[in-house]
Amino acid sequence: MQDRCDMACDRCDARGSCTDEENRMRRIKRKMLVGSGKGGVGKSTVAAYLAIWLAKRGYSVGLLDADITGPNIPKLLGIEDERLTVGPDGIHPATVGNIKVVSMALILPTSGTSVVWRGPMKMAAIKQFLSDVCWGDLDYLIVDLPPGTSDEPISLVQLIPDLDGVVVVTTPQDVAIIDTLKSIDMFRKMNVRIIGMVENMSGLVCPHCGKRVEAFGSGNGEVHARDMDVDFLGSVPVDPELSMLYRYLDGIEVSSPGLRSMEAIAFKITRALDTDDREGTLQRG
Ligand SMILES: Nc1ncnc2c1ncn2[C@@H]1O[C@H](COP(=O)(O)OP(=O)(O)OP(=O)(O)O)[C@@H](O)[C@H]1O
Image (cartoon, rainbow, N blue to C red):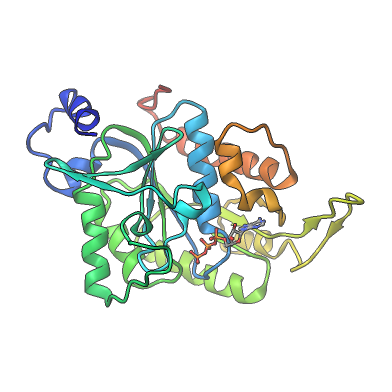
């Protein structure tokens, strides 16, 4: 573990002085958030898929689960039994399929342990995840936000220098859309670029007859994205494969309606960011 971080530091001008989040963060080329005003809409699923998709294409990727009280990324990636380790140089992420993962769930003794913390404690943990984690040199850091428009998203926006933007996730129901529009408004007030909106759980394709069933409706997200002048990145149907992302991570060749939609969305996100990569800094590993 120690070696891995030292090797990365060898190539870094900031060697020996990387003691705060700014120094750690400047070794990361692209930093994006995945957020929503509403819980349970699929933020972690979109963040985890994106991380896997980028890692499979040779990029070095970090995935920060910033949901301190409800961390689910390790479960989605099938690494609940992994633990973060601590060395003299800082906290070492867990690694899966070339993705460096940090989450409260990788610290807690059991998956049933609750984190009963008020705001300042949660803020301290988030700050530490940015300042004390040996992320090393990364092409992308993807931050999975907790739902809502309060402390955690605000702090992350303020703490991450040169943030590239946020992908907002919604589901088609009105209550989800209303909360998602609030989060778009919040990110705009904080001058964060909205990379685009994803409508998740948008209908489902019957595995028996192949017909589409509009379980929660669909299309609402696209209409509201247009109204808000936000790029619509695509809709993703309900698909059991998406709750088994660890299979896709393991290299099992899976093709399903949900995974195909996610792939098209991942392309759009990277294309949107690459348009801004004028210096061509992103290199595949
Ligand atoms: N398109 C989909 N098809 C099937 N299951 C899905 C889909 N999207 C998400 N899920 C499942 O729904 C549940 C909630 O998704 P997820 O954890 O990604 O939401 P979230 O917005 O991150 O939740 P939270 O607000 O709690 O952080 C998970 O069990 C996930 O596997």
